[in-house]
Length: 175
Length: 454
Image 1 (tube, one colour):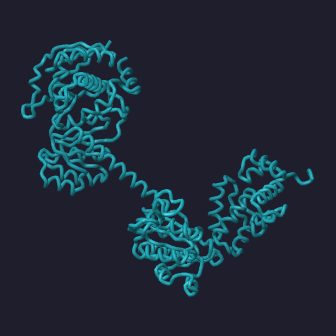
Image 2 (image 1 turned 135 degrees about the horizontal axis):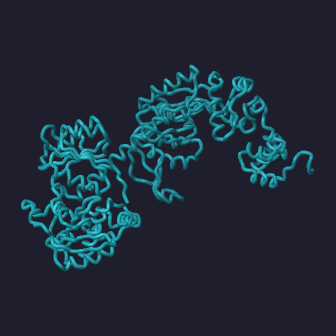
């Protein structure tokens, strides 16, 4: 069975544990948690007050995880140099991905806290980024988890799972 | 799943920008190429086709503004989006003036970038579609329609091309069946209005009240039965051409309203209080002597002068007999295709008859004659006996003496069956119906082979 190594980066334990179980179910993959073997602060950009997800991806790829996939799960805000922020990033058809819970939290939009909703969003974004590592691009199917979301409410519109076409693709690549 | 929809070119001297943008667009399903300099970008432009180009405005050597010009010189259809580190009004305005689709400031909001590229692609799609439709219209409008090598028709076509370039009102005169509507369509097709509609209305086919409503449209409840608001032909012709056929048949009251609408390019829908402004060109046609109608008081003189700015007379077919073989072969080809019949020629004797005939119904009558000959004739060629004026249709007077549609249908089927010696398959083919239908008709009309039954 293929393995996914989850690397928490300034992430609360309350979010990490349930995420493992949900990802195992959605991706049909063994999920292991490992502490980062690098200092995440090396990827911090003081002028932007955010963490550079490109640099995080590079660090994650250096993690000694054998042939398995590796995904950083951050509780901090991520950016790529040309964009103001990203919910996550992945190597298309590669091994590494990173996802952030920071902008998935109602608190930063001044809305009442909703831990359940935050958790749902994080699972969807994690599955989405993992889909990219299987070579999937954005999908036009309304409810598919691979549908593009550029603002947080769009994440709520889609399901946690893949549409049949994307599911078939992932299964084909996993097998 | 989405398949790659378009090619995107990203030009920026900063690796991190190229890398992150490329990764972002690839995940969206695009095929992405990157270039770190203008020179590399131009080389890639020569090698491939791109829908969108994202250019950094400030680069060493050739900057984004100059690169944009060179890119557009290679491919006018590329949607260029400028990326600037610091938006200044001057550079942004300059970029847009030079034809950039839009510009964004680094760092870009992902939502904004996504929408911007979506809009750029949609605009490009519409422009491409528009260009393709223009080509199709040019192809259609440039095709046959009017056929004739005779000096008379050459002169008519010369007039058509000349007057088409103006916005003048044209009156097309000619006997019935000479092709007045085709000429109106040709004028429209050659005119700058050709990408807008030509709206024809046959004034003679409608009673006065209906004609007013057809021309000017009406509001809901304007009259009994006006359940919905409806646009009139004048409004539908906005930007294009209004073709008024059989103009001599309209009532004096409608003439007044029409004159006002043509002069002011403004009219009011029936039942409405506000006027509608429209822009249309008028072409009208008649086979009546409008001058005589004016003298008799049946047609308003002011409207006559307004319409008769430029008039052209279509010669009757008997005055351009040299065109008959060309026209006959054109209709032969058309009907052979429509009926899927293998009649591919006209015998020299039949052609001589066609040329000698006087054609009171002009080109329309010739078309009908060829169509009828195709129905009754046998492959490979139309013979004199197939022509209606050589061998008039006996079924015009039906055996039963009746003139109803059913009587005519019965007589026609009987005649075709006799002609093919009751070969059902052959008769069905000639009648362009299937064999089951033909059997049903035979039973319905109680048709019997001569010498059988009564």
